[in-house]
Image (tube, rainbow, N blue to C red; front, side, top):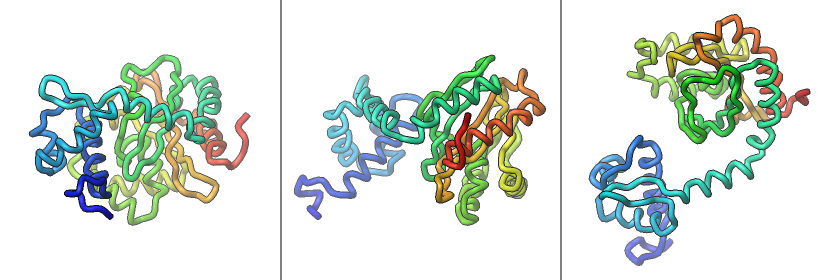
Length: 255
């Protein structure tokens, strides 16, 4: 492996570039260099080298002495959406799921200890606030718990530890023991039901999606405005949701 001082790329320099990208992706606004350096805990000269490479590729844009993601990121996202088999298989299944339930269906793909929205089919009425495609959400709240409930125990505990200090949209902090009990119930019943946890205006049900070997890939959810979506309506949607999730998991066709 070449030394970074020689000007040749190294594994560490690639990792630093991804650290910079992730910091920019998670920010709600463009970042100044000093703020970016603080977030990634790197020297300005190191961050500037990473930024220079990313700017040449159109992945990062500099303006008004700040940095933000560039249009090149959309090319990468497009490449994922057109080549990811799960997302491709999900859309017709989700269209049917929404047609039957009337609720918005969403597919979140697991990425380490987070979930990323990859496909959405809008229901009626539409949600007042829609999570943008590509958004990252935690696994300890909302439909993310359907993923966590089916992870190995050590990974479940890691997610629970991450929830410390998190306050739900209702203003209620997450209690670790209550979360463990909730995960146990979800694992036994095969679905999650949540209202107003991440957003007070959203009620949702979620079912885990796995591959044929049983590895957790993500979660399929149906959701609607909490003012129009009662617990009873969510409960009634669960059998259809589970059939769709099983189809995505390769367990049986969905028709």
